[in-house]
Image (cartoon, rainbow, N blue to C red; front, top):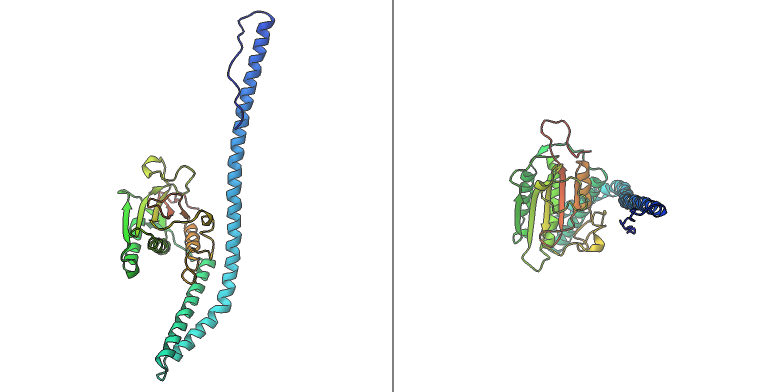
Length: 316
């Protein structure tokens, strides 16, 4: 921090040269104080500019990585997709042989399962390289979240996970594509349930919907909608009581192919896809700094509908 000059002034009650010296001293002090204030303001502006430049650089680095992955995905899908489809077809024909032994049939079943997994990964790569064109329209984010949560509850793997929902009583409509939003939320909820199952405590996932600023600035996080004069977004936060995200992984969590799951379990494309789809809708998916359940908390924020206006607040 810059040195703050004293605000004392010399007394000019004396006469003659003493008064002149006091007046000159006071003028110099005022000039130094003004200069100090200007320098402090300039330093503050430089710090803000440096932060903005760092964010812009990080964004460009990420965009470059995504572009590389997109090119790779298109090439891989073209070169591998068709042969993999043919391989699965031949495996299916082989399994129809009535003279196969049980052991051989099991081997073919496992080969088909692994081939289907490769085809699924190829599909995710295609989704990542060519995100679907979305249709933006007003939607009830809370209703979509409840429907998606129903799909999660139906899976026996998560029957012991406590699934909790909390929503503001009065919640404006968001703007987005319902099918795309459901895809994003399903990814976040499944990840949260998987993380909660790793907890030493009873697994717990909490889904919270509230009004929120579409772009969260420093100091905004944790602020309820009623305390902000203007909310341009609707947020669905998905929190779990799992082990959380390590500090060294926070900057990489949305990178394609980065995963904290065991090898062969996760592809590392789910969060990258979710973030890209949200951006396609004019929204954002991000990892929050603070989680209400002490694990990880991810948030999907979408632009809020502005009644009576053709414009969507916060949309690109």
